[in-house]
Every structure is written in C-alpha cells, then in structure tokens.
Image 1: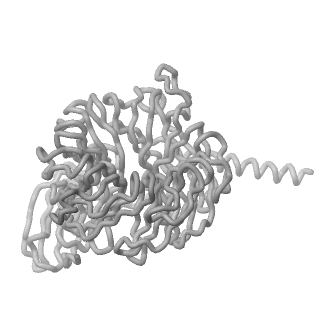
Image 2: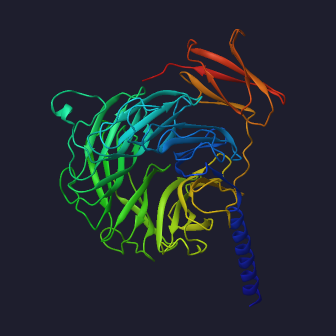
Image 3: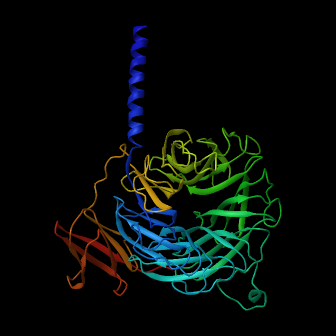
Length: 542
C-alpha cells in the first residue's frame, strides 16, 4: 500500500508539473491592435525571416489611429510589416474607387511579396485595369522594398472570389478561387483577352485555377465544377509538379464531379497534373453540412483537410459532433485515402480558419467560437466570440487549448508560428478594451495576440543573414540585434565598393539587379558592431 501511495504521489507530481508546463506554453506575451477609427478587416498573416511578420487585409479607415495612409475609395488592400515585438516597420495601402478585399499574402522567392484578393474597382488610382465583370481576381507583386512590380486583373463576366495563391517550383504562381462566370462575349467572338475567363461555368459556382509565370502572364487556366456550388478554398503544388485543390461542394455527380454527395455540402478534393487536368477526386463528409477552410501539406508527405462539420457519424465521417458545428480534421495520404479524422468542440458554433504544423509534427488549430445569440447587448461569456487555439499531436489527439478575447466579437483568421517558436493569433476584433484586449483603435481592428512557447529552446540569432540567398535580384539582409543607426555597403570580391546607403531598420533590402552574376559582400556597420554576409547573385530560372 505504501508503495502504491508513493507511486500515486509521483504520478500526481508529474501531472502537476506537466500542467504547469502546458499552461506556461500558452501564456500571452503581448497583444496589439492595428487600424484607424473606422473598420479594418484582417484576412491573412505570414511570418517573415527577420523574426517579425506581415499582416494583410482591407481597410475603410482614414489616417487615424495608428494608420498613416488614407484609403482611396471603399475598402482598400492594406498591409502592415511588423517586427518581432509587434511594432511597425512599414505599412502600405493599394486601392481603387470600389471595394478591394485582400485575402492572401505570400513571401516570394525573390524576397518580395505577392498580394491576392478580389476587386470590383474600375481603372483608376492604384488600379491599372478595368473590371472584367462584377468582381475579379486582383494580383499585385511587390519587391523586397514594398514597391509594386506588376499587377493583374483577371476575371470573367460574373463574380470571382479568390481564396489562395502560392509560388510554384518554376518561379511562377498558382491562383485558386471560385468563379460564377462564363466566357465573355469577346471571347466567344474570338477577340481574345489573356486575362479573361476562357471556359463556361459548369453550374452555380466552380473551382477556378489560373497559372501565372513570374511576370504575371497567364500560362493556362482551368474551370472545374458540378451543377451547383463548388467553392475552392486552398491549393497546393504537389511533389510531381501537379496540384491539390480542396474546398466544399454541394454538387451531385455532374459536370467534372464524379463522386457522390454525402450531405448538404462536403469537402471536395481534386488532384490535377501540372496543366490542371484532373487525375483523381475524392469527397469527404456526413449527412449534414461540411465546409473546408484550409489544407496543409505535412512534413511526412501527407495532407490535412481542416474545416467545420455539422454532421453526426455518417457517410465517410466516423467521428460524431458534440455540440452544433465543430472543427473537423482529416489526414489523407497522397492518393486521398483517410489516415485519421477527429472533431473538436468549443461552443455551439465553432469556425476553423487556420492550421499550422510544428517542428515535432504536432499542429496548432486556429479558429473562433461564435455566440449562440445575435444580440449585441448580451455580455459575452469567456470562450464565446473569442479566438480559439488548440494544440494537437501528430495523431490528432488534443494536448491543450487556449481562448483569447474581449467583450465583443473576435474573429480569428490566421494562426502562425514565428521563428522564436511562439504563435501569433491574428484576426479582426470588434470588442473594446477588456479581458485580454487593451489596445483598441477603432470600430473593427486588426488584432494580434502573441503566445510564447517556453518549451522551445531560445534560438541564437545570427548577427547578420540574408534571404533569399542565392538571389536573382533582391535579397533582404537581416540584422539580428537592435541598433540606432548604421550603413550598408556592397562590395565585389575584389573589394570595389558598388553601393553605400544609410539604414535604420533591421531588415535591409539590397538590389543586385544591375550587377553581373557572381558573389558579393554586404557589410553592415552600426553603432553596435560590424558584420559582413556573402550573397550569391544567380541566374533567374523561369
């Protein structure tokens, strides 16, 4: 008996230590709000190599709050580049006279950024081309300095809704979205416009994918759909050069869809070759409504489909919901076979938005739990209308969860893991200062919460590094320490000085575009110390 009591005491102590470590890993390090006095809506966020991050969304605000630029018309694209402490490096806005909704931002291999969203603005202000229909894809390429290199307006006669853009292995881009358009009359009459839709609609809404080269020229496009509504939410390039498309569909077997429908709406995954030709497709769902929100290519070569489910165990869904709408994750192999699936319940209506993989093969789910009432007078309970983060292991088993919120509506859009091992929870908040939020700017703000990760060993920062390296033109030289003032100097290997300029920020864009292929040295001299990094100028492989 004494031995059993001794063992139980050790077990209890271990559990207490484990719980303490778990709670410590979820502590809030800081929270920040960004925006003007009106409304600013965040849709995407990405970590940057300098330990900071970039936020993307749309703004209605003038230069009020901590926003320094006026908007141009209705909603404008707006991006905020932040350092690791959530302080501003720079911000930029792009817009026409209509509504411009920035849905996705990605870092590009040349150190710049690609912005992708939907616009109904006519030509004028920052918009260089007229709309093709009601709403079009609007793509803007920025270099490492945040300067526009090119932009494209792409669409059909009706409505296009962009959800995802990704770099491809050939240096170009793949756009994934939803289209309700048919071919324009110009296309039907043989008057070709490269940036208009080439195929007729299959039904109500279709998957629409567009392949661009590195200059934004269209190489090919494909329409894929059934007779009803098919909404593409995520696209990933596969190891064979093809693409995995994932979204939601309520179409029956019709058009391009060959798989039966299980319920009101299902997850629909389509695998294509490198030219967008269908190789196989799969449907996943129960008798209710399933809405896929994101897809992740995992480090073991498989895929996770993540979204929301309102179904009990039925169809090929073998995990039942607990309460209303729950998060639903499936892990599939490269041929679409289910490896495991799991549901996660927070409140009555749980809406998943984001999924990130950790270095150890575990995952962080990001989303929000909606209130059971639409009354704005009712005071929010904790965990309702809040950001929700759930950590799961590689088998889908929950390890911990964290809710973060104000007294209003907090809609999480993106969870990201930054270089120090912590997490950013980024979205839009309508709440005033209360509970976890103490930084509101206006009616609706970008709201970012940093969770620290005490379990990860602190990474030793290099005093100087460069990304990308090799590069065809731009690279970002990243200074790994704080300084007040400094200079950057570019030398060739013979020691000849080619460029010299003052610096104030820890991310230093360097343009090698006018120099021949070879090796260059960038010297950073600050009031703290002096360091040099070697940069390889290589051929741009299209």
